[in-house]
Length: 219
Image 1 (cartoon, rainbow, N blue to C red):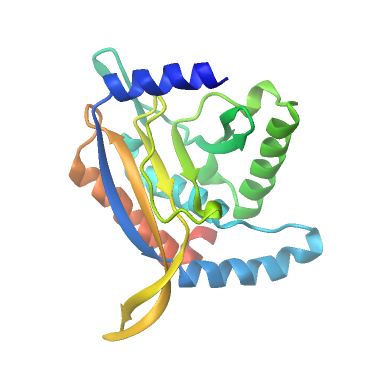
Image 2 (cartoon, rainbow, N blue to C red; image 1 turned 45 degrees about the vertical axis):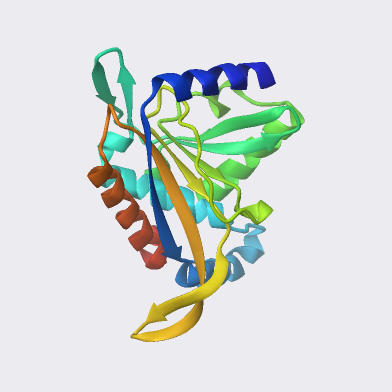
């Protein structure tokens, strides 16, 4: 697996013109809403992760900016009708991406259950064929390791990947007052053959809006 990862990442970095856009996101409301929803879901044995919210937010933002839910093939751009979010899972042998298909159409609890089931099968070496392949956009989250921010390499033939760090306590301005908030840094790596900086920035603004107004994720 390590050799295959090396081959794919080297090919991507040498053939895909990457560019990067970073956004700081105030996660206080998202974390509070997650806690509230988990209290409701506890009786069902469900627990949402921060990554579940990020996957849903990314999927909804891709509806608005479909060029980032695309692939570059030969000399043309293919815009995908389905929004299939790849979620990177760390294994002892390397990274594997499981896929949440039509993530924009699923509830947060459905995304959570599906991601956990597929990640569990990946770690046990019992993946089903439909668990992998066919992703149109990937989310890579290193926040659980305390990583503040990083950039990720695009997985061809996808046009973009979102790298997410941990929410960190730091000063933020609210209503012209400085308070302590939990701020998460997210960086999109995008293929310049498919999109440009302005569109990637607009996607990140939409992602930020969704996570800072998390009720939008449940509508």
